[in-house]
Amino acid sequence: MNQGESEYRTLNDGAEILTEAFGLITGPRQEQYDHPFEDYSKVVEIFEGFTGIGLNVYEALLFMVSVKMARLRTSMERGEIHHDSLVDALGYLGCLNMAKEYTETPAFMEAWNG
Image (cartoon, rainbow, N blue to C red; front, side):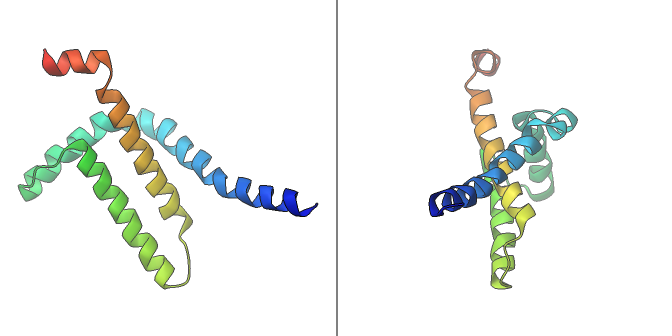
C-alpha cells in the first residue's frame, strides 16, 4: 500500500462513524421511539413538567449534544476518546436535522398553521 492509499484508508475509516450514527437514527430506534421531532416533543413536555423550563425540540436535542460533548471532554481529560459518545453526538445532530426537515414539510406546516 502506498502513502496515498494509506491516507485514504485512514480518512475512510474515520468517516465510518457517520454510517454508524446514521444506522442508529434511521433503524430500529426510530421505529421504537418514533420520529425524532415527535419523540423530543414528548421530552420537552416532560422536562418542562419537571423543571418549569420550556424548551423547544431543537433546544432539547442541542442539550443532548451538550451532554455528549461533556462526556467526550471528560474522556479526553483521561486521555481517551469515548467512541459511543462520538456516535451519539453525531446521532443527536442528525436528529436535529431530521426535526428541522420534518417541520418544513407541507403536511406539518398545514397542521401547525391550521
